[in-house]
Amino acid sequence: MYSVILHGRRLVQLQKWRHLRFVVQNGSAFSNSYSSASATDLSSRDGRKVKNFTVSYLVDSLGLATKLAESISKKVSFVNKGNPDLVLSLFRSYGFTNSQISSIITDYPRLLLIDAEKSLDIKLQFLESRGASSPELTQIVSTVPKILGMKEGKSLGRYYDFVKEIIEADKSSKYETLCQPLPEANRQGNKIRNVSVLRDLGVPQKLLFSLLISDAQPVCGKENFEESLKKVVEMGFDPTTSKFVQALRAVYRFTDKTIEERVNVYKGFGFAVEDVWAMFKKCPYFLNSSEKKIGQTIETLKKCGLLEDEVISVLKKYPQCIGTSEQKILNSIEIFLGLGFSRDEFITMVKRFPQCLILSAETVKKKIEFVVKKMNWPLKDVVSNPTVLGYNLEKRTVPRCNVIEALMSKRLLGDTGSELPPMSSVLVCTDELFLKRYVRNHGDKELVLELMTIYTRGRVSS
Image (tube, rainbow, N blue to C red; front, side):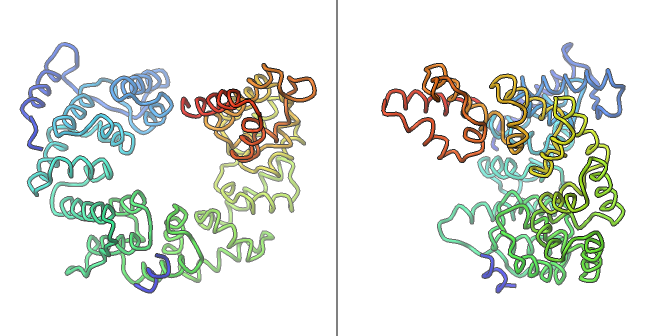
């Protein structure tokens, strides 16, 4: 195992909080009863009302961006702020900062639905009783909020201690190996040992702690874990990326015989063995797809107008398409046709940028509206450069276009002074090349400073 590693390389004022709990539960501003529900369990109208309430609460109480709050509302929704207020007040009473609380709720929003007094407070008191100082407690819970979703007791305490040990070791300038022999060969012991091994390989804390707190099978065993880890390392997966963990899950799940059978299925559809493993490197989860699902995806893409060899090429470029539903793929055609693209143009874009098949209607419409309607690039430019649909609008496209608009307004582009450059010249190049072409190439230092301010302001404000 070590050869594999080398290869990879509160005292706080609780009384004040309890008083607030009494006020919240008995005051006229809130209902005495707390209720929560998933929007999918309600009627469409009531569901929208609950979702809007949740979004407003997250924005007003935690200062979250609306888009982030909307994403969280898909995971948890509530109809009043009684319990959520108690949860936030409880965290503050233990010394958590507003930034830490926002991070906790963003990572594990379900905490807003857990009984603050009967569950969360008891767990936090339990951790304090083990000697956790306020700074340690707030840092560790902020780093691994899902630890509060565990039952109070030995497992909670042990996992907390282990997370603390890793955080402290990683702060040290002297690297420490935490893979120590454990007396009991049980599920919990195996998880701690195996997560230690992954940590020594360089797997980031975020991925480590997710594995530790979950019931992820790859880190629960011993021999199978070691064998699977060896295979993934030898395949060349980078331990610092999420694909490393995805590959470990996939290899752990399947026997060599099953993997061979899966590869043969793809061979039957026209893929070479080396193609299958190249696809696995791009998307380890694609081996989970059944023969029926693979065949269905291929037939759906043919319905879109792709020839068989073109389908193979698209899936080799973007194997994630195999997990996409037939309806979503067919809907994507309608989205692009509705925006003025022809079916042939859609096929061309898919062949160049298969991700077109899984982009949401909202994303496509928003980006097309900006580059075509606002910037006046023709649709054919999007057909030629479909990757622009995959770029972050706020962080990449808008800041660059702000610079171009500024130059056009000053009549500093092209022969006419206000000539719109090709889309590829503005959006497809690297940041460094963009700056060299449109910002730093001017002799006027004041102009360069102005353009750089326009560019960076757009990126920061987004």
